[in-house]
Length: 345
Image (cartoon, rainbow, N blue to C red; front, side, top):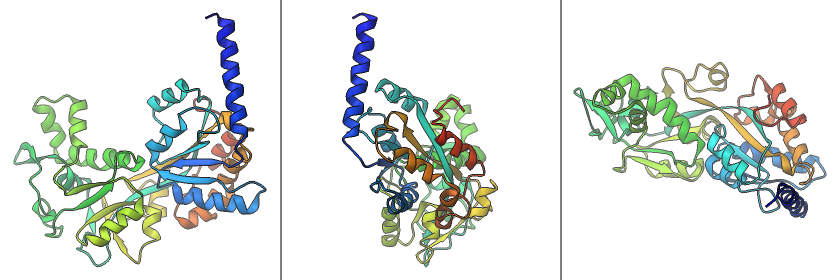
C-alpha cells in the first residue's frame, strides 16, 4: 500500500473514531479503587456545578483501567484511567499501538498504604518491613538458609508481635497498590533480613532474587483481594486476627472499625506522608486521552476542575477526605490547561 493510501486510511479511521465518540456526552472513567472515592467526589461536584452530565466512575484496579484506556479511541473506550501508580512503558506502547497517543498524566496528590486490623483485634501496633516479609514472603531466611516460609504466628519471628495466627488480606496483582506494597515493603524487608543477599549467594541473579523477594506464600496466610477496600474490610470483619492493607483515606474514614500500626516507627498521617517521613506512600494519578478532548463534552473541564486549588488543594474536599495535596499542583494545572502530553514536561 502506498504512503498516500496509508495516510488516507489513518485519517479515515481518525474521523470515524471522532464521530463515534461524539455520540457520547458523558465522561467515562475507570481504574484504581484507591482513586475511586476522590474521582467520585469530584464527579458529583462537577455534575452539580457544570452544565454537563455527571461523569461515570468505575473501579477495577489500576492495571485494568489502563488496559481499557489503551484499547483505542472512540465512543466505546473510556476517556480517563485512574491509577495509584504511574503508567508503565509497556502500557504506553500498547496505547500507541491502538492509536492512543498524546496522553496527559495528571498527578492529583499523594496517599499512604496503611496496615490496619480490627479495632478489638490483636495488638498489631508496630511493624517493620522485615515483619511483613517474614510473615508473607514465600521464601524467608531461617538459620542462614533460604527456606519455604515456616512461620505460622507473628511471634514466631518477632517476640514483640502477638502470638496470633498470620493472616493478611493484600491487594491483588491488578491493583497499583500491590506494586507499592511489593517494592516498598516486601522487597525492603527481604533486603533488611539478609534474605536477598542469601538468595544471590545461592546463585540467583539480582532480578530473580527480587522476584522471589516479592513472591507471597500460597498457603492461605496471604490472601489477594481483587475488589476494593470495602471487600478487604469485610474479610477483616469476618477474621478478627487478620490485618489488611488500605489507603490512608479509607482507614481515616473507618476508624470506628479499624486501628492502624506504625511502619518503620512512623505513624501514617497526612503530615507524615506530605513530608515523606512515612515510608509507604505513593502518588496518585489519572490519565487523559487527548484525542477525546473537544469530542467528549466536559472532558477537559472535568480534568481542570479536578486539579483546581479549591478541589485538590490543601483546603479542598479531597484533602478533607484524606488526599495529601501535591506541593507541585500548579505544574499539574498547567499541564492540563496546555494539554501537555507525557514526555513533554
